[in-house]
Length: 222
Image 1: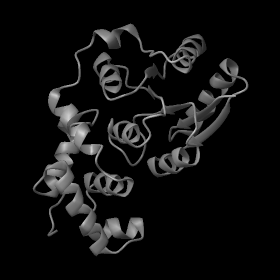
Image 2 (image 1 turned 120 degrees about the horizontal axis):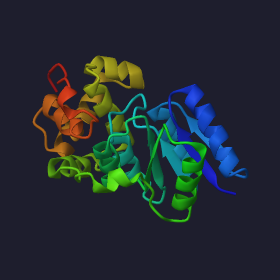
Image 3 (image 1 turned 90 degrees about the horizontal axis):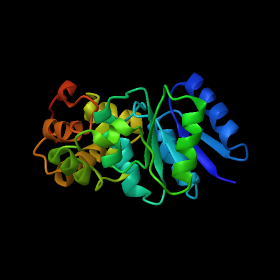
Protein backbone atom coordinates (compact mmCIF):
# COMPACT_ATOMS: atom_id res chain seq x y z
CA UNK A 1 0.00 0.00 0.00
CA UNK A 2 1.93 3.06 -1.21
CA UNK A 3 1.95 6.31 0.76
CA UNK A 4 1.85 9.45 -1.36
CA UNK A 5 2.42 12.99 -0.11
CA UNK A 6 0.70 15.89 -1.86
CA UNK A 7 2.12 19.40 -1.40
CA UNK A 8 0.02 22.16 -2.96
CA UNK A 9 -1.49 25.33 -1.50
CA UNK A 10 -4.69 25.19 -3.57
CA UNK A 11 -7.41 23.09 -1.86
CA UNK A 12 -9.33 22.53 -5.09
CA UNK A 13 -6.28 21.18 -6.87
CA UNK A 14 -5.37 18.94 -3.93
CA UNK A 15 -8.90 17.55 -4.09
CA UNK A 16 -8.62 16.96 -7.83
CA UNK A 17 -5.23 15.31 -7.40
CA UNK A 18 -6.59 13.09 -4.61
CA UNK A 19 -9.36 11.91 -6.90
CA UNK A 20 -7.00 11.26 -9.79
CA UNK A 21 -4.56 9.33 -7.59
CA UNK A 22 -7.39 7.30 -6.05
CA UNK A 23 -8.53 6.18 -9.50
CA UNK A 24 -5.03 5.06 -10.43
CA UNK A 25 -3.94 3.76 -7.01
CA UNK A 26 -7.10 2.98 -5.02
CA UNK A 27 -5.12 1.50 -2.11
CA UNK A 28 -2.78 4.46 -1.72
CA UNK A 29 -2.65 6.40 1.52
CA UNK A 30 -2.56 10.15 0.90
CA UNK A 31 -1.12 12.85 3.15
CA UNK A 32 -1.24 16.57 2.36
CA UNK A 33 0.58 19.83 3.05
CA UNK A 34 -0.40 23.36 2.04
CA UNK A 35 2.83 25.23 2.79
CA UNK A 36 6.56 24.57 2.92
CA UNK A 37 6.61 24.48 6.73
CA UNK A 38 3.76 21.95 6.74
CA UNK A 39 5.56 19.99 4.03
CA UNK A 40 8.80 19.71 6.02
CA UNK A 41 6.83 18.48 9.06
CA UNK A 42 4.93 16.00 6.89
CA UNK A 43 8.07 14.56 5.31
CA UNK A 44 9.63 14.14 8.76
CA UNK A 45 6.52 12.34 10.01
CA UNK A 46 6.20 10.17 6.88
CA UNK A 47 9.84 9.26 6.38
CA UNK A 48 8.90 6.00 4.60
CA UNK A 49 6.59 7.65 2.06
CA UNK A 50 6.82 6.26 -1.47
CA UNK A 51 6.40 9.50 -3.40
CA UNK A 52 5.98 13.26 -3.00
CA UNK A 53 3.91 15.24 -5.50
CA UNK A 54 5.27 18.78 -5.18
CA UNK A 55 3.88 22.03 -6.55
CA UNK A 56 6.58 24.54 -7.51
CA UNK A 57 4.68 27.55 -6.20
CA UNK A 58 4.38 26.52 -2.56
CA UNK A 59 4.14 29.42 -0.08
CA UNK A 60 7.47 29.77 1.70
CA UNK A 61 9.74 28.74 -1.15
CA UNK A 62 10.90 30.11 -4.47
CA UNK A 63 11.00 28.00 -7.59
CA UNK A 64 13.16 24.92 -7.21
CA UNK A 65 14.55 25.74 -3.76
CA UNK A 66 12.24 23.41 -1.82
CA UNK A 67 12.88 20.59 -4.30
CA UNK A 68 16.65 21.01 -3.96
CA UNK A 69 16.60 21.25 -0.18
CA UNK A 70 14.23 18.29 0.30
CA UNK A 71 16.36 16.15 -2.00
CA UNK A 72 19.36 16.94 0.22
CA UNK A 73 17.53 16.18 3.47
CA UNK A 74 15.60 13.13 2.24
CA UNK A 75 17.45 11.59 -0.72
CA UNK A 76 15.44 8.38 -0.37
CA UNK A 77 12.14 10.18 -1.16
CA UNK A 78 11.24 10.31 -4.87
CA UNK A 79 9.77 13.70 -5.82
CA UNK A 80 7.54 14.43 -8.80
CA UNK A 81 6.91 18.08 -9.61
CA UNK A 82 3.32 18.93 -10.51
CA UNK A 83 3.02 22.42 -11.95
CA UNK A 84 1.05 24.74 -14.17
CA UNK A 85 4.38 26.03 -15.49
CA UNK A 86 4.73 23.77 -18.50
CA UNK A 87 7.60 25.39 -20.42
CA UNK A 88 10.10 22.70 -21.50
CA UNK A 89 12.95 24.60 -19.81
CA UNK A 90 11.09 24.61 -16.46
CA UNK A 91 10.41 20.90 -16.72
CA UNK A 92 14.05 20.16 -17.59
CA UNK A 93 15.31 22.28 -14.67
CA UNK A 94 13.10 20.27 -12.28
CA UNK A 95 14.61 17.02 -13.56
CA UNK A 96 18.14 18.45 -13.36
CA UNK A 97 17.55 19.36 -9.71
CA UNK A 98 16.57 15.84 -8.72
CA UNK A 99 12.89 15.36 -9.52
CA UNK A 100 12.09 11.88 -10.85
CA UNK A 101 9.22 13.26 -12.86
CA UNK A 102 7.27 16.29 -13.99
CA UNK A 103 3.50 16.21 -14.45
CA UNK A 104 1.82 19.26 -16.01
CA UNK A 105 -1.34 20.30 -14.16
CA UNK A 106 -3.12 20.16 -17.52
CA UNK A 107 -2.46 16.39 -17.78
CA UNK A 108 -5.49 14.13 -18.08
CA UNK A 109 -6.18 11.16 -15.79
CA UNK A 110 -4.61 8.66 -18.21
CA UNK A 111 -1.37 10.64 -18.39
CA UNK A 112 -1.29 11.04 -14.62
CA UNK A 113 -1.75 7.30 -14.22
CA UNK A 114 1.06 6.55 -16.66
CA UNK A 115 3.37 8.97 -14.86
CA UNK A 116 2.62 7.65 -11.38
CA UNK A 117 3.01 4.04 -12.47
CA UNK A 118 6.36 4.81 -14.08
CA UNK A 119 7.90 6.62 -11.10
CA UNK A 120 6.60 4.09 -8.57
CA UNK A 121 8.26 1.41 -10.70
CA UNK A 122 11.54 3.28 -10.34
CA UNK A 123 11.61 5.05 -13.70
CA UNK A 124 11.58 8.75 -14.55
CA UNK A 125 8.67 10.37 -16.37
CA UNK A 126 8.26 13.72 -18.06
CA UNK A 127 6.79 15.06 -21.29
CA UNK A 128 9.10 14.49 -24.25
CA UNK A 129 9.66 18.24 -24.64
CA UNK A 130 11.42 18.33 -21.25
CA UNK A 131 14.12 15.91 -22.35
CA UNK A 132 15.08 17.99 -25.39
CA UNK A 133 15.23 21.32 -23.51
CA UNK A 134 18.60 22.87 -22.52
CA UNK A 135 20.07 21.71 -19.20
CA UNK A 136 20.08 23.99 -16.17
CA UNK A 137 22.93 26.49 -16.18
CA UNK A 138 26.15 25.89 -14.27
CA UNK A 139 25.55 28.81 -11.88
CA UNK A 140 22.16 27.35 -11.05
CA UNK A 141 23.70 23.99 -10.18
CA UNK A 142 26.27 25.83 -8.06
CA UNK A 143 23.53 27.66 -6.17
CA UNK A 144 21.69 24.39 -5.62
CA UNK A 145 24.81 22.75 -4.21
CA UNK A 146 25.25 25.60 -1.72
CA UNK A 147 21.57 25.55 -0.73
CA UNK A 148 21.85 21.86 0.18
CA UNK A 149 24.17 22.81 3.04
CA UNK A 150 21.50 24.76 4.93
CA UNK A 151 19.57 23.38 7.89
CA UNK A 152 15.76 23.49 7.68
CA UNK A 153 15.66 26.54 9.96
CA UNK A 154 18.32 28.33 7.92
CA UNK A 155 16.33 27.52 4.80
CA UNK A 156 13.24 29.15 6.32
CA UNK A 157 15.23 32.23 7.28
CA UNK A 158 16.65 32.50 3.77
CA UNK A 159 13.18 32.31 2.23
CA UNK A 160 12.02 35.07 4.59
CA UNK A 161 15.00 37.20 3.61
CA UNK A 162 13.93 36.71 0.02
CA UNK A 163 10.45 37.94 0.96
CA UNK A 164 11.99 41.16 2.26
CA UNK A 165 11.57 40.55 5.99
CA UNK A 166 13.97 42.14 8.47
CA UNK A 167 15.60 40.22 11.33
CA UNK A 168 13.04 41.42 13.85
CA UNK A 169 10.16 40.33 11.63
CA UNK A 170 11.74 36.94 10.98
CA UNK A 171 12.24 36.43 14.71
CA UNK A 172 8.57 37.18 15.33
CA UNK A 173 7.45 34.76 12.62
CA UNK A 174 9.70 31.96 13.90
CA UNK A 175 9.25 32.66 17.61
CA UNK A 176 12.96 33.19 18.22
CA UNK A 177 15.10 36.14 19.33
CA UNK A 178 16.60 38.64 16.92
CA UNK A 179 20.04 37.48 18.05
CA UNK A 180 19.16 33.93 16.97
CA UNK A 181 18.05 35.21 13.57
CA UNK A 182 21.33 37.11 13.19
CA UNK A 183 23.23 33.90 13.97
CA UNK A 184 21.23 32.09 11.30
CA UNK A 185 21.91 34.86 8.78
CA UNK A 186 25.63 34.69 9.52
CA UNK A 187 25.62 30.93 8.95
CA UNK A 188 23.61 31.33 5.74
CA UNK A 189 26.07 33.87 4.36
CA UNK A 190 28.99 31.57 5.16
CA UNK A 191 27.41 28.49 3.59
CA UNK A 192 26.30 30.34 0.46
CA UNK A 193 29.60 32.18 0.11
CA UNK A 194 27.83 35.55 0.24
CA UNK A 195 29.06 38.82 1.73
CA UNK A 196 25.60 40.16 2.63
CA UNK A 197 21.94 39.25 2.55
CA UNK A 198 21.46 40.80 -0.88
CA UNK A 199 24.05 38.43 -2.35
CA UNK A 200 22.52 35.49 -0.46
CA UNK A 201 19.05 36.19 -1.86
CA UNK A 202 20.42 36.63 -5.38
CA UNK A 203 22.31 33.31 -5.14
CA UNK A 204 19.17 31.52 -3.98
CA UNK A 205 17.24 33.44 -6.64
CA UNK A 206 19.06 31.50 -9.35
CA UNK A 207 16.65 28.68 -8.46
CA UNK A 208 13.58 30.86 -8.95
CA UNK A 209 11.27 30.14 -11.86
CA UNK A 210 12.02 33.64 -13.15
CA UNK A 211 15.43 34.62 -11.70
CA UNK A 212 15.31 38.06 -13.29
CA UNK A 213 12.30 38.99 -11.18
CA UNK A 214 14.09 38.55 -7.84
CA UNK A 215 14.06 41.75 -5.77
CA UNK A 216 17.06 42.24 -3.40
CA UNK A 217 16.03 42.56 0.28
CA UNK A 218 16.70 45.61 2.46
CA UNK A 219 20.12 45.55 4.10
CA UNK A 220 20.60 45.78 7.85
CA UNK A 221 23.49 45.18 10.18
CA UNK A 222 24.26 41.54 10.84
